[in-house]
Amino acid sequence: MIKNGSVKIDDTEMYYAAFGKGKRVLIALPGLSDGLATVKGKALILMSSYKRYLKDFTVYIFSRKNKMPEGYTIEQMADDQVKAMSLLGINKACILGVSQGGMISQYIAIKHPEVVDKLVLAVTAPNSTDTTTESVAGWIEMANKNDHKNLTVDTAERMYSSKYLEKNRNMLPLLAKLTKPKSYERFYRNANAILNFDVRARLNEIKCSTLIIAGEDDKTVGNEALQILKDGIKDNESYIYQGLGHGAYEEAKDFYDRVYEFIS
Image 1 (cartoon, helix red, strand yellow):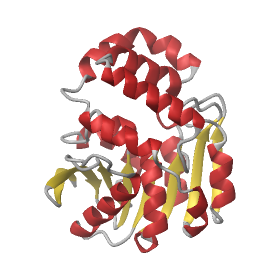
Image 2 (cartoon, rainbow, N blue to C red):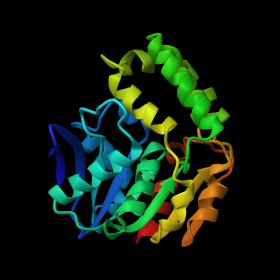
Image 3 (cartoon, rainbow, N blue to C red):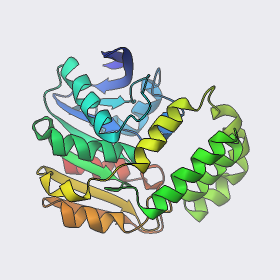
Image 4 (cartoon, rainbow, N blue to C red):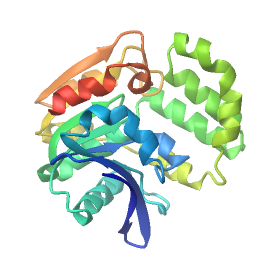
């Protein structure tokens, strides 16, 4: 199965890309980049990272819903994600949450434990750390100034390793031109939700088996987040990518193999 679909959530839609034929389900939730571009129509492109999964799993990658009200929270995003699962007949799934997607995933595991099989939290945090607040507030300011070039460049500088940046830095201005949205409203809703997120006091409510993946030098969420997650979630194992940061899920060649081995 390869499908670009959507489900109706209240008065709007939530896009998803789906592929695979396995009986088990993996749901992947992307980070703040979803505030700039959704997964609509991208199933074939997104499938390339999940080729190993296709026999054993049916994979769904979800965007946040299209219309997000002002003040929309991470907790509400989690509740809407569970609604979408129910509408698609997904009773239980492994969940991979990357960055902001990991924040949503934590709330799903806390409030809706019955729908979570195994949980993977990648380059994420249980709250808006000082590093996160600085990063996101800066990006909001750049968006307010309609400065998409610097927004793109600063995001990359905070995500990727020096080696990666040396090879790709010259491409960033072109990438900025190609990815500039018509409106930043969706980005603002996602970004402000991050700034108001904090589940540190509730991490002990996550009961499912959890894999926590971090980069050694994460300039987006900071390096203290990993230890807080490890201390708060009882049934966990963790892995740190040396020499990588927030973009470890893109740069590490074995990232998706590592996730597969854990959820399998």
